[in-house]
Length: 516
Ligand code: 5AD
Ligand code: SF4
Image 1 (cartoon, protein in one colour):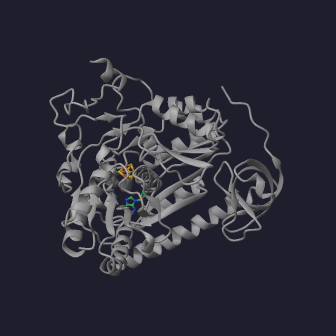
Image 2 (cartoon, rainbow, N blue to C red):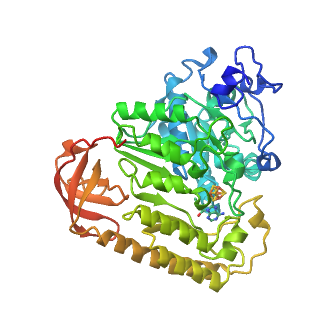
Image 3 (cartoon, rainbow, N blue to C red):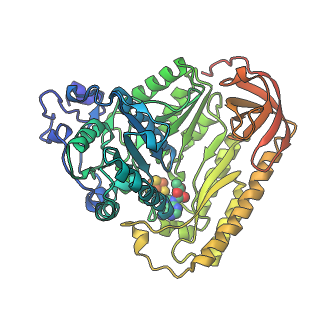
């Protein structure tokens, strides 16, 4: 293995200058815009491709200054991963000279960064494309683009090609760094520009970012998912599990700390699988958290985790506390072992409960939250009841709850389903009632306590009031000087409301010792 490959974890880094990779692989695609549409068949494949690692992103001379005097507007749908991708896209636009537009009317380029997780997420995007049609007719020079998870779907691209001719460009989640070429092509071409690679994915470092806010920041630690839960589209839209090098992550977080950020949220579809793909390193998520604990940044969170890869070492490290907060989002999806099996979740109800027991013993004041799907094909009343009893047994503090939505090309889509929609809706209602009861109870327990709050600024509802979140992700509203925005403060909780806590400002938290 060459020195460079060793440094990059056995990954191949193509020689960009000579346009040749260190392997036989053809990297010419990184230079010329290729018209490629997504392929479900290719998106399903795992293991065949090298992961290319790039750390020398730069804007080609041809495109420098391309955006001067022009503005961009990005509308983001879906999860934090997408929000963070939008920060990268905004970073690339900014380097090209574009400025942010306040409204779509004011923009020269409009991008929809889309989510494919459920049908209603997709319908919102199609609705928005419909709304943008008159604008495009009034102003044919405006460019409209679709990116994000929906653009990775063959069926979506076909639908856009057929029905939404107001769209000028479609690019995929693996093609973000190619934005300058894609925009250039869209300016030059009369045809819709489509560049979507259905591949396992690369790792591209040093992409520019325009972060949203200066208090909290997102940091990707890994990309993709190999779990292939039978209902889920993500492994097809985001590619194979691939981890960023620890040194790159640590450097990024140190820089954020130096810039004054107070909270980091580590992002990955399945952060617990972090490091599994390293060939040269025995370094997993627990090791990363142990290293991040030593960085002088007050809070580190992560989302989202899969119960299967949540190992004892990780629990042991999280129990050390310090900047590792007492909140774990642990999607369970169902409380029934037989249903979990059909969902492809690779753990049983009992195994999940055992994991929860271990976490609670190690971190007594942990707040556990979850994701649940109801109305999976043929879910019986008994299976649904098991979800209810599991929720009670764990005592989750809140949950994101969903009705199952069939996704194109997933195994579950092909399952016959004998559960009527009104039964699914009734189950969701019943579950949501329980979730709300537990959320209220979880807030109530803070009454009278003094909690640490990271102040984010004026409350959305009342500018006289400040708001922020506790370590366990509870929203707190209180009165205090605006000057404490961005600081960690102590607040005494007076009253638990339905969705938040009301409190009284006590004082600023003195800088804590970094835990080693
Ligand atoms: N239908 C409904 N919910 C889904 N999720 C993922 N795929 C689907 C689907 N096809 C939910 C899961 C996951 C969360 C991000 O979205 O609960 O944890
Ligand atoms: Fe989807 Fe399952 Fe991967 Fe989560 S772990 S992204 S639910 S396939």
